[in-house]
Amino acid sequence: MSPQTYFIIALVAYFVAMIGIGVYATLKTKNHEDYMLGGRRLPPAVAALSAGASDMSGWLVMGLPGALYATGLIEAWIAIGLTIGAYLNWKLVAPRLRAYSEVSKNSITVPSFLENRTRDNSHVLRIVAGVVILVFFTLYVSSGMVAGGKYFESAFNGDYLTGMLLVGGVTLLYTLFGGFLGATYTDFVQGLMIFAALLIVPVLAIISIGDLALVAEGITTVGAGNLDWFGGGLTAVTILGIISSLAWGLGYFGQPHIIVRFMALRSARDAKVARRIGMGWMILSLLGGVCTGLIGIAWFHIKGIDLPDAETVVLVLAQNLMHPLIAGLVLAAVLAAIMSTISSQLIVSSSALIEDVARLVFKQRIKESVLVWLGRAAVLLTAGIAILIALDSDATVLELVGFAWAGFGAAFGPLVILALFWRKLTNIGAIVGLIAGAATAWIWGKMLSGGIFDLYEIVPGFLINLLLAVVVSLATYKPDTQDDQDIQKEFTDTGSIVIEALQKKTS
Image (tube, rainbow, N blue to C red; front, side, top):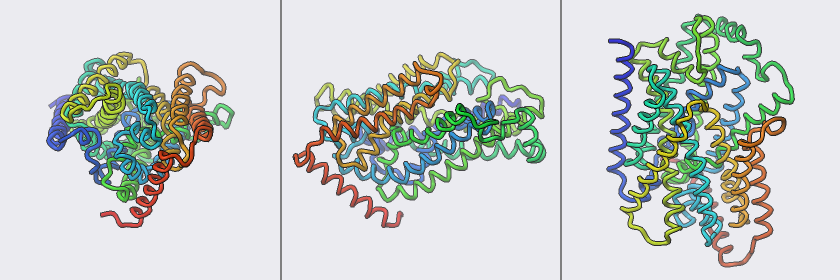
């Protein structure tokens, strides 16, 4: 059989498995809360790997290795920033958010949690938060579609549009009916595939070259600064770039598709085990991505092979270094990274549109069965708009992901931290901070450039949100009201639950 036939066999097997998991999840989905949050019954291993897979997406196997291949070790600062941010997110946010979201009127979305936590009876905070999620997630989903199109161009010499539509269609199918559980179970399997691929490919590349000395020589021959953490010199521009790369870690606190996994854990005490599993997976996977990009520089130079698109380095290495069937499974792992994030983001977008916007706008009780189908319609709508955006194949995966990541981090990160750890956050402070953070990230990223404006937009957006949320909250805080008493009680109850949970051993 030809290599292409092996690739297709592996790909079809993967698609069938994902759809099968989606069908299984559909049978487990009984009501709207199941569709949106899986009934809060995720085991720690599933939560950890699904959070990691939905977080890293095509960025981990295409964007990060591609950036290292194109620029060198200086791009690894992003991985360091992400590792620090993810650890703090699991350590500080996960157990408290799991407990607090249930204590505060059993909130099942991030916007509903912020509304219930601040007692925003006007519902403005929840609606604005839902709209921000829809805007940035539509862009985020489109990055996955772009990655899917590029995947098919590289793996099969196929058509960008056909590949994009196929990836989007299969992901949409299992997400549409399986809901949160469908996305989460498939993410778990996809996380294992990504992990294996990013550890195997760089090892085989080293073996193919001969030894590490030849690898290092090949990397530095292509570019003297490729193995320099500072890209060949420590300048003001370099420092700004490193700060921007490290700042990616700030984004974790505000990513709805990640922190919703914390809310879906079986209990707060599962957060510790999930953190250990998740961080182990993440560190090794990031290390594999960084090594693949760097080793790829040497491999393509030594072999005399041209790589037109840096973001396809993992794909092309797998095709050249492995038996076609195994390479097909690696190609499926790359596809898994792309699809895992798309599915998670579609679910959160659906919850934002139905749970946080439509239900409040129409102000009437809707049957559970109708809500589930409305959620599916919202998934379909979001996917359709994302596909239209992704028709522009010139955008890079890293650019699209970076902008959406900054938008969420700047809009929600400070508010999640303040809501969990500061008693005086008010609804007005949260609304002002949310709008200011999102607007700053958008304007800074889309309309400003050059000099200080080359700083990653998440930094000014996060700081402005934090500052305004605190200042406005202090100005509008009203102690000793009934709402304030309720908030104080919930805050204290949450602290007690977390302390008790972390003192117990996780089963």
